[in-house]
Image (cartoon, each protein chain N blue to C red):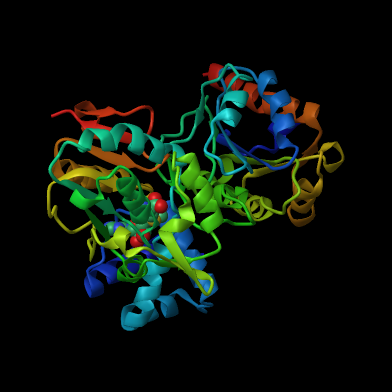
Length: 203
Length: 269
Ligand SMILES: C[S@@+](CC[C@H](N)C(=O)[O-])C[C@H]1O[C@@H](n2cnc3c(N)ncnc32)[C@H](O)[C@@H]1O
């Protein structure tokens, strides 16, 4: 399925989500293989308290190295990154992170659009954007940016989302490549990963 | 959407015409800020944006103000201020004189927060707070000590979380949707423009705060500015950064020790 549409090896996968997305991640993360052949970058709407409970919660669900991002951290394949509360997360051409505490976008900081647009600029067609459950239209512009630069778009099936609005907006306004339920999402991520490992071991 | 080469042109203009050097600012953020301004001010083309920046000094002010980010609040990250109260200020108390530098102070909320801490620690009388920013407009606000009323509730909560025990509203008088902080807080403040990219060290300090400024710089400029801070800190002085900023990519790492898990480092000699 997934492999056929991918033009380039996937360097990075972005996951954006709001209300109802943490539950999805709690199921998806433990199901992922290790090591991952790509960097997985997660941007969630969260309360602007700087507490680290969300990072702790998610990190316990995976064997992969997991970090809440510090400014200028390099982006490495195999690592899972979480956008810190109260900063926008941007990506530099040298594949490191930059943080930015400017105005909220779509009432959100971090904003999914901001990270997705900036990643599209850097990763082009080696990028996959995934949008999960949420009650906010954040993420749609970001998905459009990824579409423009040749990346692949995935949305959680709105019927399987706690709040379908966010993926629905993306589906309505982009040529979303895959609309998947949680099991479909897990299978998709596995296939992206295995595809590359087979490719790599063939050499 | 602005192209990389167009950003380069604009940055060259800003340097040649006005002496502002943004070339080592974090590119991703800079690009986003310029795009945002282009949209907001409805320039039909890049050429028009460029012309306006080059030829209109009033517009330049707006450009600098919008491209740099001025977001700030009082007692931002209350836990950070709690550690200043409990671990940093007590070690400075024995000094005959305390010099503090707020680099990139924006509209001054951080400086007033510090003045409140110093007042409560009975140290304000022997302290001097140097507050600098590249942007003269934000310094005007800081100097006035007048802030919007709306966020005071949040600030008051932050203040309490930072270990504050007084009535926060006793530090200001309310007037027409604004508050004016007591002059006892601002008496020891000195405001001045200072550009971290091009200006030198101007004193020796016991504590330097530079929070949420380095995130807008690339690694090269970060290292340069951190060296400037190192040169400006006295023996056993403290350096405080923003919640997500770190010394881990810098050469200072080996000669500084982190305080209580907060973004505060103490010079080891
Ligand atoms: C986001 S604010 C931080 C305010 C405050 N320190 C805080 O953490 O809440 C960043 C400030 O850095 C200032 N700044 C940006 N570049 C600078 C430079 N080269 N030299 C001095 N200040 C600079 C901006 O004008 C802005 O006021």
